[in-house]
Amino acid sequence: MKFNVLTYGCQMNVHDSDWLIRAMESRGWKAVEESEANIFILNTCSVRDKPEQKVYNVLRRLGYLCTSPGDFVAVGGCVAQQIGEGFLERFPYVRLVFGSDGIVQAPQYLEELAVDHEKRLVLNDFLAQYPEREGGLANPNEELLPPGIGTIPGQAFVNIMQGCDNFCAYCIVPYTRGRQKSRLSSAIIDECRALVKSGVREITLLGQNVNSFGMDKNGSDLSFAQLLYKIAEIEGLERVRFTTSHPKDIAPEVIKAFGELPNLCPHLHLPVQSGSDNILKKMGRKYDRARYLGIVEGLKEVCPEIALTTDIIVGFPGETDEDFEQTMDIMERVRFESSFSFKYSDRPGVAALKMMPKVPEDVAQKRLTRLQERQKHITRECLEELDGNDMIVLLERNSKWQEDGGVAWRGKDPGGRVVNIFIEGIEGHLPLGGKLVKAKIIEAKNHSLVGVKVGDLW
Ligand code: SAH
Ligand code: SF4
Ligand code: F3S
Image 1: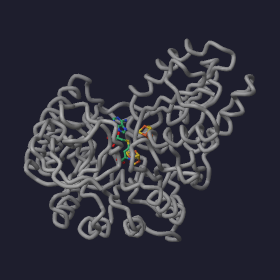
Image 2: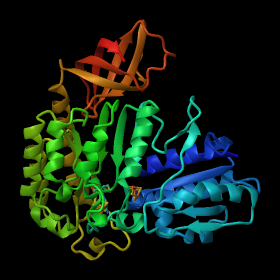
Image 3: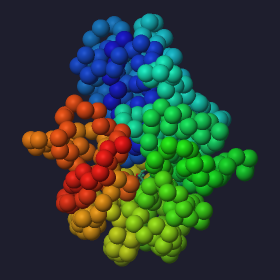
Image 4: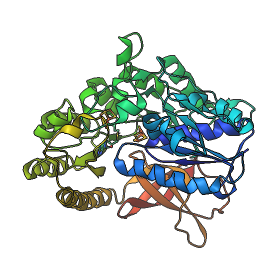
């Protein structure tokens, strides 16, 4: 069968789609361009209204591509969990809906639906335990690859938990991903070991709230800090990262790890959401700006070069000009290297839906524009400070920028910054993705760095 997967949303959705593609390919299906496909899988995000609306637009478009009786669409991810049956009712060519836990069974049912053209079903039940996933495609040594491998050579993502228990007032994720379920640490460690054995050099541990790993198990398994140390210990693992962290749960041992573990990358994505205590309280975030700034201070003490990035919401119900100034102020104090910032968007069923007064659209937009302009400058200044430094870059793919006499590659430094490196005397077709190289930074651009190779590739 020829299939196409279209993905919206966060890293977890990207990882889910990567897994599903490999699971289907290992069953003999072929991932193709949309125009050649018979089966369309749409992995959706519901975090704001815009991505949800996009799903309905894309579905209408895919309807025109379902021309033969066997053609159909499968809708997965957070909007699928939220709407469920509604997709079957509204769109005759949607024949499978799978939610956050249902994805594990999706490969088997996709196969059944490809044969039985009458069948339609919804896989939306939440399970009591973290559902383990099958491996995919064989590697050259004929072993099945573990589920974590994605599409970037040398890098892998490993789920350590599913769901979220925090119910921040604005957020739909606890409803779409369900209650927090930590995966067994032994399964995580086995998967990481197998990935390193298959050539992976960088692992990112994934979860909505990784710092509360194990808290749903009453101490019967490792804490997040203990898990992190165990994974960092795996021989041959060059880099480890994790995302996302909630400030309320970050333990002193995790902060300490940034000073102790040589392969823990000096980068932390720590969503602040707002700089105002008043708004943080209404959001139900359970920390205040003093606690947030204390964490930042602790991190910079043990790891002065740490790159901090964040998420910010502007225009949360009741946000005043003064509250917003507090957010601008915390940006100056922390100097985030980059941030994802959004206007507050009403979501069905969340507590903030009923909170008043709502901030007018034009006021929220003005605040967002001002914040993003300021962030642009800070990002640029942070990158300029790195000019002249040497750093190790993990290469990913050919860079868009090319010159005669060599090839430019794009990769990431330990801080997670994009670095473009010109490598002289190398031909374009050489598979350098997944290789490490020492580079000297010679220029800072708006969102990336430019470097030259100063050591051997390994
Ligand atoms: N688990 C992560 C974030 C998950 S959602 C955490 O706790 O930080 C990703 C980001 O989307 C959030 O950090 C938040 O900034 C944003 N977001 C979530 N719900 C939103 C809403 N209703 N309106 C606007 N932004 C939202
Ligand atoms: Fe949403 Fe809050 Fe959970 Fe993050 S911690 S997923 S923002 S409810
Ligand atoms: Fe979106 Fe679901 Fe991720 S709502 S941000 S895809 S957890």
